[in-house]
Image (cartoon, rainbow over all chains, first blue to last red):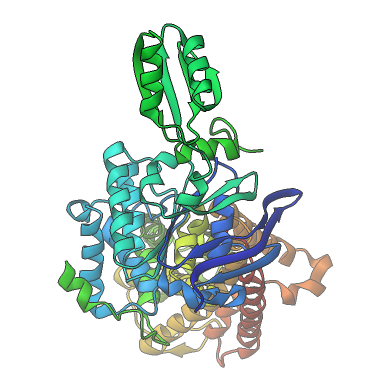
Length: 309
Length: 287
């Protein structure tokens, strides 16, 4: 097997005239936690559906755990998937819903079915609600059940599409821990989200989708690495501070709401503070800001998480 | 929990060729569903009503009554046949259409289809299991009507020898056997309708729409069958041979209609199952 859990090349899907996914070359390295980002409607879910064999691509190739498009089914037993939210039978209990999925799996051992189901429920904290009807589950519980369903058998790859959708902050953090622990156990995780901050901390790699195209992809350090840290001086005379910063070699200095901001280009931050104070400036605050992945993300996909046409 | 995990580490390593687990799960889903259970109870209504109505009316049914009705007071087994005749037009096709229309479209509309397919369940296997569930329900529905009819009839009118349509008599046991054969024959017809429902169900994500389309298909077939001007099409209609179950109550049994009906049902099953497969095998699952 190559070093990639998922690769696609030129992956394209058209629905009528609408191009939902346009020439996407995805590469999810084995063992990585790959954050698949993009605004709602940018083509993440359609890409994931093609990778899982639910949708036939209009053009392009897919490799899933070493198997090409026509043989994706051979890889699927090693893949756990949560696609576009949870979906279960309303009138069955959580446990019965998992029983049905396990029964459908030709490779799952019926002898260990009960213990595997309960340990999956336990892992997402649903064991106490196992006999409750799915109808009575809250959105957060439904989401957890869907994650439990993907954990019924050990998986090499987990594809989690918007796993934190509908979860409260507490639940979101638990999902993050779960993703981290799955990765620690050696699984590759492909996790999509339109809310970057929710998964940023656990990702080793990211890919950013925008209007059907993959606009950036790579290790987190490289994607966020282009931007240099910036210094911000808060003072009542920002114009003066800006002049001092420029003299000290800070680049792109701007005045912004009672403060001066510029890119540190090798200039030591402490020199800026010292310089300002020597000139008699009243410095009320000083900060060095490292641009977050979020800033990169916004730069790539535009402001706001609007639905892309 | 780690002990549990260690125990199942190699669980994915040996795929089994055959397992009845999914089929049993499907049967549990079909027969465990409240809606379907209520449907089966409703199907018991006509045989109960018929038997009570005939019993409570002082005079024997008049000459104009259908064949089986006039014979009810002579032998309770005819309650089952009268009930099957009545329910054949709408109730039984409706029950089969409800389950078959729901089969794939229902899973698609709740979204469970995508999770079954990523387990993974092979699409052909999914269709086969879905169809097996439909067939099981079709026979169950027919047998429920028959059993209720036999029970009510024998209790209210007694059993005894059965006078056939051609006048001769057979014993109660042989009569019961022929009633059972009639029910199984009709079950085959409804299984064929179920194949149509399965196909329609792969076309849509709206289970109600698939069910309606299947009922309309069956009703349109009945209507076309009653229009003499299009008699050339009659032999090909799905409902055309259903009434042939009455031929089992002649002496000797007239097999031609029955044979025709079984061939017709087999033809419908093969054609519509293949059509469902052709549609479903490459279908984009976007729900």
